[in-house]
Image (tube, rainbow, N blue to C red):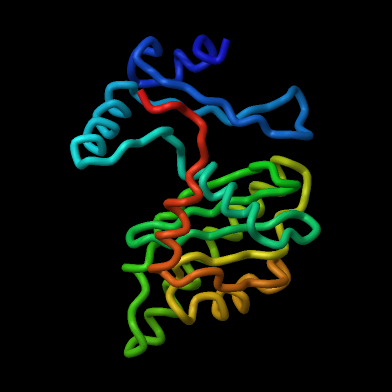
Length: 200
């Protein structure tokens, strides 16, 4: 049924797709998030890893890896938010009651934040990121009719970003905390990838 429902949404034949579904609990009509990728592209990546001497057992997606990472964090009322900061982008994930609720990539990464010699530039980039996060939280609240998590953890963020985001988000986020340094976050994220799809 999922394959048939996604057929008109893909830009390639659904017969060439590998699919997965993520249930969203406590939603009307038993909503799900669907994930689709061209099977040949997945196979190409798996073959590349095997050619490097690695043996992938599962293929996962970043949303579920970040959900699994959230399982290791203290969860406050309303759930927990996790912002993974990568070089060119960020990924905001919201988890409640151990279940994946929502995730969104944000087109701002660590390369957009200047160093200590440009505080004005750092502030401007922080404001841009805070605005995108506020928009995401507003969408989440309107779409799912529940407040977004009041606690936000940052993974791989520039050192001043947690404090600056805490100030900019204000009452929208009661607590912003750095979880891991950039180097540590990459190691832990690699371990957190969920077992969702067996490797081809």
